[in-house]
Image (cartoon, rainbow, N blue to C red; front, side, top):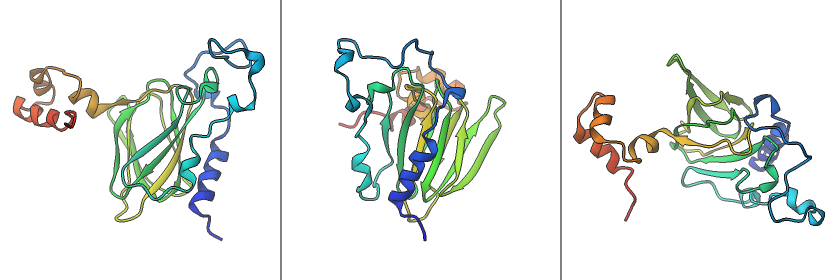
Length: 209
């Protein structure tokens, strides 16, 4: 019997729920866990180690925009020092997670529903691409530029990603280049184009009024 989207989501959590110390980008800690500053450790209970921020996803409608729901140290303080974090990625048909990097961790992506074209570029500028089907796992090596694209004509896709860091970080290539006030002339020379083209690209990243 085919698994439902919900069942695939929970299966993804089970498959990815293992220590990622081999690809960890976080320093080791000298205690069982890190108690937040100002918190009395003797008052901590199981709720400190529980994150409920994914619950709305279980009964949610298909996505209308590319959406990332994170469980990192910022959202889930108990992850501090544990060298692991998660993200659930939802892709409407035809949507893209633009080229980006995670400077502090590799990413292990498990596609639970739909299809995705994924790819990354290594330090020799070689592009590695693959079309994933539900049930496939793909690893994006630490720090390398990568992307995901829902190449389906009409169906959405859902993936769960695990990271070997509680704070893997995300550096978006388009936003970093065109939304950080790098001089137009420098960008024009770098991309071998003219200033007017650069300004048009920058306009697409300008804050909406």
